[in-house]
Image (cartoon, rainbow, N blue to C red; front, side, top):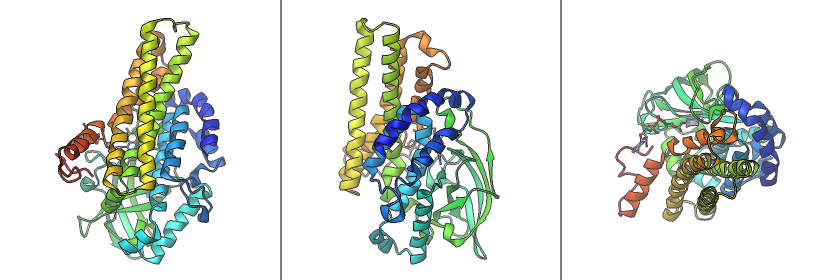
Length: 384
Ligand SMILES: Cc1cc2nc3c(=O)[nH]c(=O)nc-3n(C[C@H](O)[C@H](O)[C@H](O)COP(=O)(O)OP(=O)(O)OC[C@H]3O[C@@H](n4cnc5c(N)ncnc54)[C@H](O)[C@@H]3O)c2cc1C
């Protein structure tokens, strides 16, 4: 799948400028991903998927993002849903007290992904961001299922996914935040609000929700699991975008090298040094992301693994923004024109630090930890 991602990346790159300009969904990229079997990347082999590990995912995301960061970011949402579902092992299911029906529903969602369905994430809300403890979308029990009502924002790929992971709060017991997989269709209305500085092709529009879903849509079959899963699998919530933004940073270096060679500017020491520094910074951030991913697979849940997860997100977001800015400066004003790859990459890279956990939040988490505190409970605001 990593080779396949490398094969697809230049096709994505060729289409990226148009989707960035129009803020349009990269439909042809997604057709390519579906045809190549990427929607089943995280689905276990026993259910017809590729059975990828988190490190496999990180390697794939990095390659896809070298083609188009926006495509890779939308795909990240699908990988997060399927990866987190696949991560609910039978042992964890037993520890959480999940019923057999919930495990069957998990398998059905994963099998559907392997046969070409893809899922978006509708978690964030205006005012709450992605902090699960603050969301206001609510659900209540109905005969034969749940009624979910609320408004989401920043939903990448809105209007194109087959189903949406929706986080909502129980109207009966507001302490319970649960997650549902809601099929596209009646009850979900996209408001085309996304006209952003960067990652424009993610089409991260608002989503109005007023829908009734059957009991099987409640992920895990138990209410109140959303925060538990966020804490058990911080890599999907914190570090999965990291590989995307390192891929964007590498694409910025590649675009600068191409520009500098075409313009015959490579003899200038200041330009050479900028490219050299950028190359080293991207390689270092990439190593940190892959180290975090390796630890997630080999030593899940260990304190040092969690530290690497937060380090990876911080380094990836900060490096992407700094490298893309420096590469634009190395290339000069002609690279600032609309349509030049560096102009787009500069804007796309800017989103990395802003996407939760923001670089400031990652730094705070790591600082509290380094000073001997408990970084999950001692933030200046709830982490989730
Ligand atoms: C390109 C892109 C695609 C996205 N796609 C999706 C998607 O598909 N689905 C989805 O649900 N969401 C998505 N998001 C949204 C994202 O996950 C966040 O919810 C969103 O960026 C939060 O924005 P906010 O403006 O509410 O900022 P906040 O995260 O609230 O941050 C605002 C400021 O407060 C600071 N801050 C926040 N929390 C803390 C804290 N605990 N302690 C200290 N300081 C804090 C931040 O550093 C920042 O300076 C996407 C975002 C981007 C940029």
